[in-house]
Amino acid sequence: MLDIEIKNFYDEVKDPSWPNIQTYQDFSKLSAHIKKECDEEHKFQERKKQITDKNYWINLTSDSICVYKDLAYVPIPKCAYSYHTTLFTNLGWKKIPLKEVDIASTKFFGLVMHPLTRWLKGITQWIVKSYAIGDIPMLDDNQWIIEPFEVDWKQLKLDLQTEPFKRLISTVNVGDIHSMPYSVMFGDLLHKINWIPMDTLSDNEVKICLMKFFNLHEHNILLPLNDKRLHESTSNQLDLFNTIKTEYLTNKKQIYSFYKFYSDDLKFYYNLLDTFNPNWANI
Image (cartoon, rainbow, N blue to C red; front, top):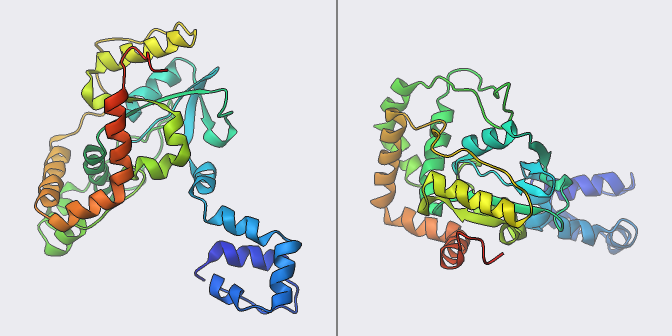
């Protein structure tokens, strides 16, 4: 079963006398009258267009966002995700699926960092989670983030010395949501969100930018300054991060692969740096 969605559509509308299919190639070989009925009576071409539209899948699968009235914080894993989801949750903001939010009337904002920095951090997190001991539950008081979990660092460090593991981390492009490209996560919505390049600012400067953004949209929301970050990386995580970084920087094929996968992200990020105004004069 290769073309799952094509097969599912066909199985829902097929007459018992029609042959079974597994792939789009099978569908293309059906009798002309069957394909005509699928097109005219069951709108197969519309369904095929959905299946091949990145934005369709983004609308179905995107994570929730943090909403207060007409404001919406768009969390991105590895971009101060834990801190800001906790901060806004404590302020009474609600966790709402993106597909339930009115895009036109909502003022979206979020934080991003250089795509390569996030990729390295994301691959590190993916590997660390893979060596978790036992289940990883969500926090009771913040359903955005997971509980601190125990990691089998002894086994991870042993595996890290093996050639198969080194080949894995020197060739992987996307591990999970933590390293997924911005452009894949958000599609067309990426360019409708007011982003702050967090790695060019201090923590306080980021929050001052956010308060200016809120004021521009007639919300007087005060954020705490000079408080501590959440979930600082441990020495083991930093060691793993530096190992992955070294493997990446010494592998020309992996560098080229990154630029192929993340070129849209880099274009977006460079443009953000060229146009970002911390006073939000460009909004």
